[in-house]
Length: 215
Length: 215
Image 1 (tube, rainbow over the protein chains, first blue to last red):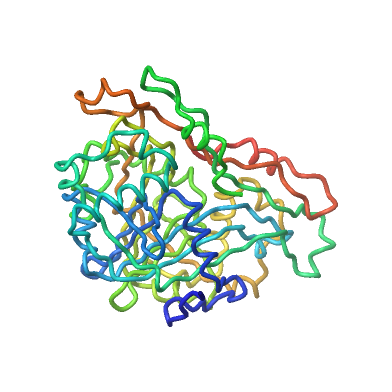
Image 2 (cartoon, rainbow over the protein chains, first blue to last red):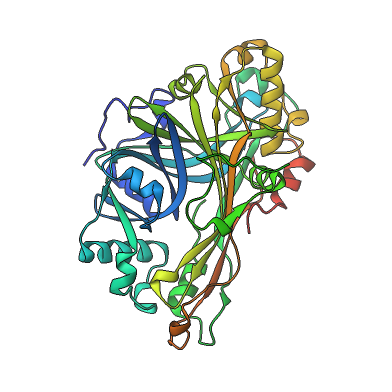
């Protein structure tokens, strides 16, 4: 299934960096830990970093019932952006410096989940997104904890994916310059776990630390 | 100098995670590579990831003159968010899972730089922010390249900084559970450079790869 191409998801700049396949959207989202969620408050935008999870074509974001951000987002148009930095691209000219990256920008109307079972499902999706296997390795939310949690659902109907990869690209006239050019890869990695409990580190945590997020 | 405390930068949730010192704002900004820049377009927010640099109390963001995003931001209220993920915090209960992070949220009116020399200065600030020493290691922008570049300045007058660090925190009643708890640190790292030029890798690139961004 193709990604939508609405006025706001069509890329004005560098359209060659646009992906058209829904699988690429899923890949960018599934590889990330946090998104940046934006809402309009009066006449200004507000952006917060927050954890998320994906189930099919729904993105879930959670927070406290006291969150003014999530309250403002309910029934409103939101923007969710997930970004991976993959490398610093150094050209011989300052002007051709760039970054290797993958990013997804999603537009949609956010909806606060009203139903306890839907909320429980969303929390499971978010938890398993961040740490696969963790849901079974921790105590499930109580009814009271569920009641104190707000979860937003954002449909993945309208989205754009953009990326750059590969080497630096210089103007032909600059190739004879003595300056270095190349790419410095960037990766986000998990380090060995620091235990706060007197039980063995479970397999799902070791699996996580062997996992590289980007690059 | 203290950070401002306006209605939109005062933290409603978890105020104990708020920093009040301007030095902490600088530290979060100086440690980052990209920000998420948000503007309001009609009735919806738009968020893009982009490189930035800081000079004193001014944040610079650049793009092409063709960027509709930067055009929309000129003279408008924008939000700039910089986020570092430092760790996954696993508690014995799903409900007390968290992340260790540092984030800065800046609100202000963006201004497009009109002057060539100011624009050149801003590009130098952005370049040196990303790769210290790089400005001298590459060809400076030509007049034509400068003319094709748009730079936004955002004042750092109104900002909030929020962070979480340290171990997991469980409800006392959960401490006897058999589940593992602890922190999985997250770091963003540079890998060894991949050369596109037949000249030695310069010292400023090696310095970069010895540098850890987060954690």
